[in-house]
Length: 296
Image (cartoon, rainbow, N blue to C red):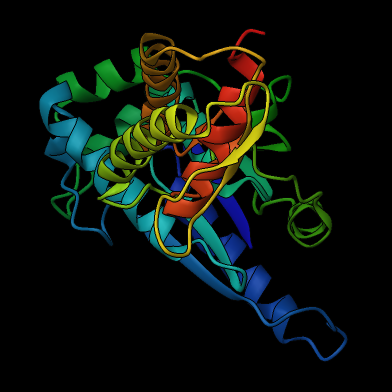
């Protein structure tokens, strides 16, 4: 998988550069000397996704337009795809968002052209895809130039409006030999808790508290290991201190345990790692929690 992001002023020639990159990559992938994985080259653009130029007239319409583009990027990112994003991509935050989504081989191509030339090209368009003059000026003023000094904008290749072609040799090496980075915490998918997780948590811990108080009263011995008959198959054992453990103490520890694990229902994990929400696992964790926190 590789993600190539084209960035530049409106009408700076981004679509032309995207087409050149696609043509060169497909030619090299089809070359008999290429012995790498089979890859498809895909261009995602505003035009291809039906995003009109008027979407950039204000922030209210621009936000869903970027959402449409980002959804298409996520849908097309795959092990066998080289995705070329032919759009303005003028906001650093959005480029970083794409960086997080890819997390693998990424290439930035900065299409450089002076504002006056971009405005002239926009005025000369006759295909109905020109920007409103006010919108064009606003986008140029708000453009956040990419920098190779930051990780989400590198490797960065700058292509001038005077260049006849793109630096395809460098782009090819970046696409085929780039370093694959492991996903970070912010981009890893976290397994959601089952819908009955809270009920299982509350019911299992309450049952253990009740069973523990009953067994403690029945056994009459202090400082022993007792078995808690929760169900016919679930009978955890717990070692108690050489004293009577009070109901208020158990209820306090139960509330602490439940509060700690409620966070995992939405976050998918606790400070100690992922949670298995099966009744047996919850029971064993709660028994261990009691043993560690009941004072002698």
